[in-house]
Length: 280
Image (cartoon, rainbow, N blue to C red; front, side, top):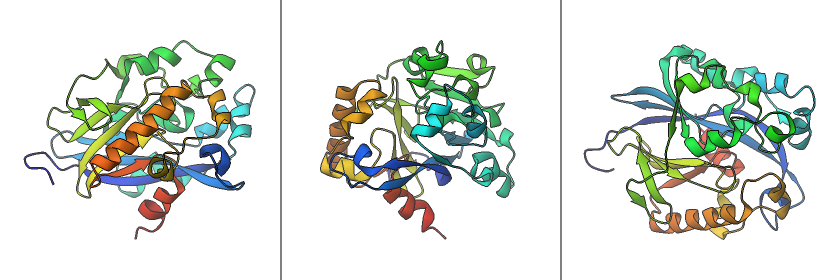
């Protein structure tokens, strides 16, 4: 553990899953379907209180994908959701109200990462400025092409949002400049371009050691180890396919330089099985 850096308590939460083909999410993958869970981190900072890394799926996701054009989202990635897996329900079982969450860090604005945002009406919403600028004015098919569903955003989003400029802080090996969220080294945000405009990751100093939340910088941890990007079919809906492959290489470089850090992609079945399913 680092010295003099606050330790953040961290718990990973499962919010449900979609079905995806392995040969789509990694080149050379098998012709089989994977359960790609959407993982969320519930964090507690000793000075700044509780916050969330993304909000994952929520029952609202089923409501907003009933009609075209957003029904196409559900057709492309069939959803398997349980209301009891929404973050709000996880908190209720822990005796916590939605108002207990002071901040939500949004890795990017794809629907499977923001479906629960409306459940936290008092939270500060933190994202990269370029991420919101890319989707904020979109609707219909234009939004769908970005895997963004406008109805998932709170109506007062702009009033509660803190939209960050490009990062200029401490440099992480391979990943570049960071933004120190609280100025104490406990949570460092890092740019992970390619999959979505303005996508960010987060290096968290936790009770379990340092964790790098990689969002959709890759879908499988195996992609980082083997430097195998997704299939070219995914180029149809990612922001920048070349940057996506570059980010994967940067994650590999970081993993080699910092083997002490556990990298947690949001949807990796291997990570879900180890860090959520097998936990007591």
